[in-house]
Length: 272
Ligand SMILES: [Zn+2]
Figure 1 (spheres, rainbow, N blue to C red):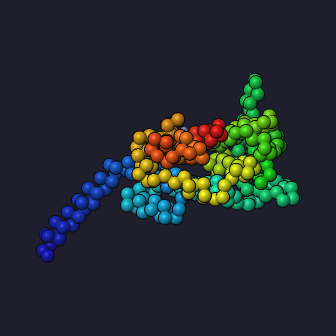
Figure 2: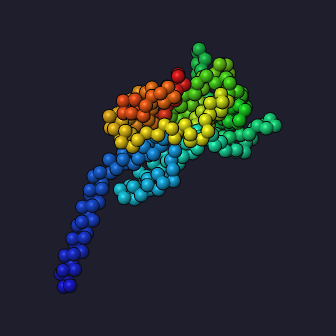
Figure 3: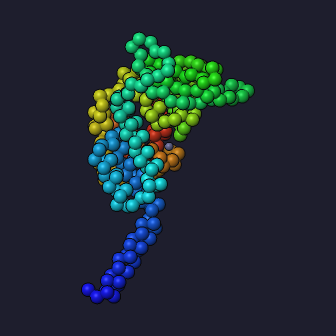
């Protein structure tokens, strides 16, 4: 090959790479949305399998998602995997600074701020939450506040973006816990323990497996609901919800399915 032919070829390759780069830059926002959608589709049956996780990695490489944009998606993936496992009843045992009773096992310890609301004012109490198989402890870090809550006293758990709201049948400890280190993990842990306490926790995966939704139905529902929660419009942590619950004979069809965020889905399931 002549020297000028080499130069032409090199320039062509360089030009093509620039086109490819410009094209990828152009579709980057859509690519990130596609990645988010892939995560939601994968999590909709409550299980992130290792195959789905490796597909997710392949897609990220194919779309050349820059590390800065990929990091939050990867951290969401890790949280979803951990929350999935906890909701299925796999509760880890952790070390804690709280003195536990015989047979009591700690599952989670996170920092949290309790918002104490009275008729006249509201005040934040900084501390930490320790979740065990028997109860939930709150320990104020400045020596103020300190209580424990039995699972039977929980009326409702409302997931918040940075924590949880606990509605209790007793006054002490009822309210919102903010600034939680891992809010998704805390609510999954509480959710699993409350259900376990009520003896409603099914064997891992059996309930989820019976609820599996065909991929074409998932895609149709996603497109109809425009990739956001039909209740609040949030586009994070979306789940496929049966309008008429599966347990009451509701089918896994497009008409009986909608997109709900975890928070709205949790609220709905607490009302049923
Ligand atoms: Zn919502």
